[in-house]
Length: 212
Image 1 (cartoon, rainbow, N blue to C red):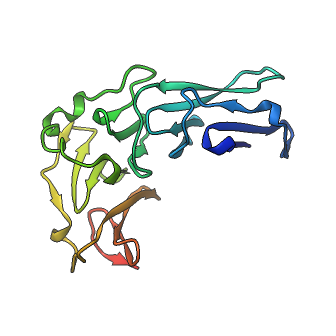
Image 2: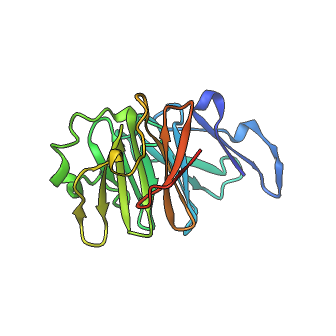
């Protein structure tokens, strides 16, 4: 077991090998750069852990050393996310919306890839990074970037973007302060939470039937 976000959000701490309920504080490893954790994702296929901060994307590496059994490593030392829901994982890696570069995705340990977003770059240049939600819909092999009450879907298979999708097209009503709040993938389908954070509804992407 690894605790992520210890030491006021800037460190990770593994449990003792064979004793998941016991921890030794001397095994603490600090994020580099040292910033509070905003979001954590784990890819089941290979166990890769993605740790997001406002200005970086980091991961955890097992060292095999008895003194420092794990260390953190920066995948992107200068690119992170501003919103808790501004990233997602697919079978091939991570997609996100960065305050510095807009739409980005991983490409191994190389710099963030923005080439896929060129067709919509101008359209999203005024999006507030703190309000962007990113989700993955395996059913359509699409990455959905949402801002306020609109979405753009990127299909990985054909490298094409959708036209802007408005929630007005499938919501019965749009309360004044409602927006797309979060996204989650479950059983191969994408679900979106839409509401005003007081009364929220869950919608299946591409279907539009909501439940509170």
